[in-house]
Image (cartoon, rainbow, N blue to C red; front, side, top):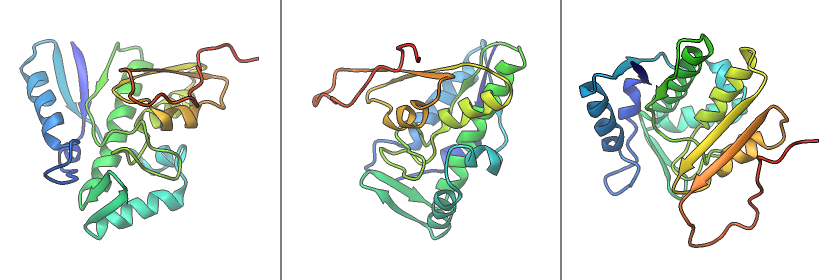
Length: 197
């Protein structure tokens, strides 16, 4: 059985009725997982502050929390918060940490069903619907737990620029970004699968 870690607040983040990143995306996935006999949906705790600070500066985290507490607003052109967005982002990061803990303990594969997404978020700036870089938070957590090497496979329509930027300087992690053909090629993209010297 595959554990599917999630957090209930992930369904409360709502950037608005015309926004493509909607709670319905996660709701459908969770409903399907709950009907699947090979999946076990598990509620994860929210991420602790130290796990978030391993990737994001405290000033950025405080600004996200404050914006959400004020009822939300536009963080970036397409990155909108509501009053539940901070709790959702911390819950999403917690789902990633629970999945990492499960796998690190040798209990098998795990899946994190979480939103808002994270692969565009930089250390001090959210963008592209993303507030916190959940996968990098999970990768750093795995490294602190003793994993010497981490591979992140980013499979999405768009390149995970935030994940690449946050992980490219380290020599113990690699990022492989798989995406559909882009309309405007990003000439800045460099393969992170080459060996480091």
